[in-house]
Image 1: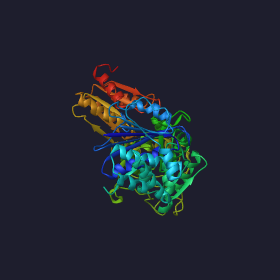
Image 2 (image 1 turned 90 degrees about the vertical axis):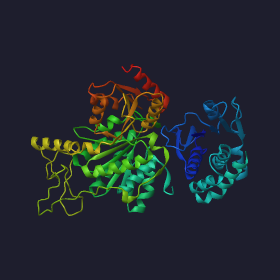
Image 3 (image 1 turned 60 degrees about the vertical axis):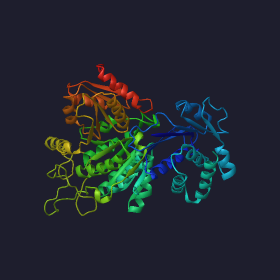
Image 4 (image 1 turned 45 degrees about the horizontal axis):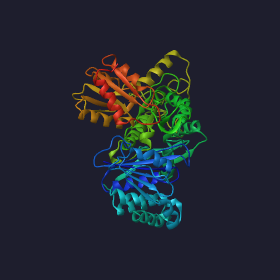
Length: 173
Length: 382
């Protein structure tokens, strides 16, 4: 069983990224469950999305011990890194949005928001850049599966930019 | 593999409704049920159906009753605050015997409560939310795939018994995405809208019961007389003040469901063959309970699990049969204790029943339920 948690604030797209990741894993024949929790606000407020991947049916739908935590806000990083295993867990943070790196042995900093705004053209693509990072680091799904899943889930006129974002994220780590 | 989809519980509910023949949705979107309305709004126009967003949940309930009387299979979806608003018209549907499915994706209450967080606090409201003596059917699915099946079943039961049916979901399953394969349409049994068995010349009476105690009133506009009222009525559909008519009417409302209870009681039993204890669970919580029971078995604890899909009418026989051979039943619920008391009533003193309650917006962890199971075995059940 592999457990991924994507965290940030409402509007950063962590839920969409988690859905795309789960769909790609499903396309490779894995069992998946994807869940989320967020506040009543339309934007802002804490947002968290989870993906569990296994080869057998998954009953309890939430993560007990994440293998990877992605945090796109300082608050999310501070809150969720504690659930990671000190030896095997991996914390991935946005280099600009998480200035105070939590005291944890395995942290990878990636400027995902900056890559999205400067290299793809809009901050809107942050989640897909982050998805590319997770595809590479997790080694759970192939880039091709992720690419196919992105194409299926994003609005047609944004496919080109989203694939660019996915590649930039994948190559950033 | 090609038919595998990543689908959300709410989306599976909408898909099940369409598959069961629902062609009219009226309602007012509310978290965490909104995706049901969204999906119905997208799909219904393409299958010659109709979607109406009303001014509030009361209007949403009224419009589906009208559409049902006009011959459409109908569904509305809501959450706690909207479920409260719909109660008066749910009673109207029970009395006037109008087929309708009401989905309640439960969130934390009372009132606005915690709109985005799961709960199971509406179990008793599903049974007794509207006033007066009436039976109720409520189904509570635990997986995305079962949400599809339960929705088809809910629509079928609404049509077959001409009664409101509650699909009692929760935020856990409503918002969960799982990989599922949906059945093909020829694999489904769909109950058609009942039609009058007699012509006017043969003595059609809209509310005269058939052999299964359910009447076949004609849909509006099909050439038959029909009068619909929330007053107690006789076979003509017009009000009657008669004690005899009233008694027969209330009797029949109950008996039409009661005679089919075994058939509509759906449940699973896991690891029960040699079980000394059982966890009784329903809805999204059953997923965590299953994991806890599995872990307890690995530790050698003789515990099994009963998972109810049919919440109402309550599975008295299932509980009684099991209680006689068990040393204790644990009921984990995301509320302050609701179905636990029904389990206790049905167990009728044959074994103790213990509640594990949680009501802080978070779902149970397997270890919380496992710990409670270990306490059962330690003889600390009371």
